[in-house]
Image (cartoon, rainbow, N blue to C red):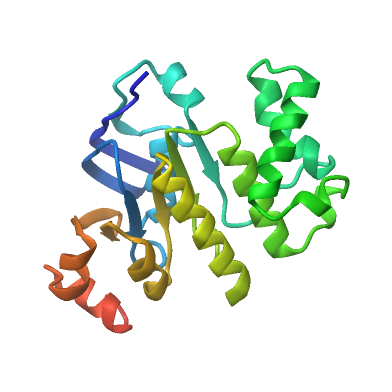
Length: 236
């Protein structure tokens, strides 16, 4: 089942009559590692939430190549602040598999295998809420990737992590992308964007100002706002 492309046409989102984003017109194709960038309040998180279906459109529409219900089965979302279930690590990772009808033993076996790839094999019997920040974010990624999603959305997953944890998360994401998972991720970290991005979506004032390859964006941005952002200046 091919769920791509993802098309957004004329999409807007409002909160209490205030426009958060839009109008947005964009197409996301099958492959790649897309970084969404922009200053605070630009609409990065709202864009990801609209794509994933966590937020309703005020106008326009979001379309996949398959019905929405089918598309949702093949995607996952990781928040900036990890959301932990009151379960052991192994059962937290197994939870998405159980939701998809896999038996307890089979789900736990897959969860254990997945945990090993994320360096969580020694924490399987630990309570998820008791993990460190980096461990929680790795658990969130394991829980998202255990279903082998076609697309993974991430909202600044390394914002609160130290350098070592950030490096480990980046390696996990690059491996996932190389294995066929389409990744769309927001970040404020320009260094991280340079390391990971194949293409960039630059947002400002709730709109997409640029969508281009990473090489072009970082060497020859098309707008003064993007240039200011790359230079570390205030964008206004």
